[in-house]
Length: 277
Ligand code: ADP
Image (cartoon, rainbow, N blue to C red):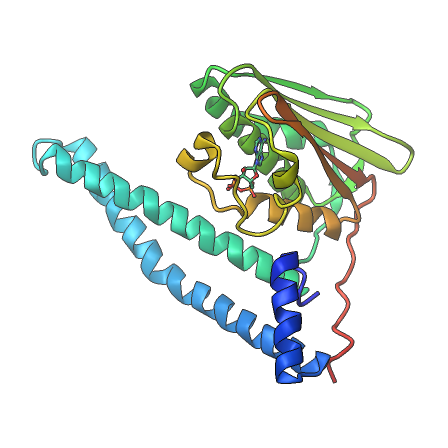
């Protein structure tokens, strides 16, 4: 569990280091964990000053909108807008990193309740729809009515759907994005998000669930704000719910992300590392 946010390459590097330094598995686990703890400490420390930078930039812009004559030249306003945008991206990066480290430390827990899936979906779609409209994409939603009584964590399901839908919109320039939810069997239900966007190469498909990976060779990915952590979080949430996530994609044609979840997702407690004494 301690190593599961590492890519294959990083794991090989760690193995080499372990051999060179003649470390036991237990010693290596302790070192990695200490490193991760200090990273998550740093992330917490960064949040306070960053929140204040964002707060002041936001306040300045709001005051400017109310009394444009009092404040500075347009170039200054543009600079502040950039500060605000970068600040928000950095804050998202920190929050998402903390979310991953919470999962990897076994501290992410589910709060399952009885949910009506179509209600969950409507509230996500209300928030996401303007993003699709702004790009003149049609957003088509189809939710099976039999999903009225699912035991799951509503906020986590909304987080999964929000991530998949916002990616589908961000990485699509023309056409449509569709969301479909159905009962798959007596035990499972399925969410699928399909877009007619840029698609994902088969090489990139192997890496998209790794933290911080972004297919930046595509100009649309390069120009869009992103942390490379959305799908890493989604795949961890799906794993926590004992579900499964798959992607089918063709560059230039579009992608379909499919998430299969149990109708009763109570989650599982993470195992405590066996090497710990
Ligand atoms: P982010 O979108 O913030 O970069 P994600 O973890 O959500 O991070 O996605 C990782 C990468 O996977 C993206 O940077 C992009 O290259 C690719 N990707 C994800 N969803 C899609 C999609 N629907 N269409 C094309 N590429 C996608």
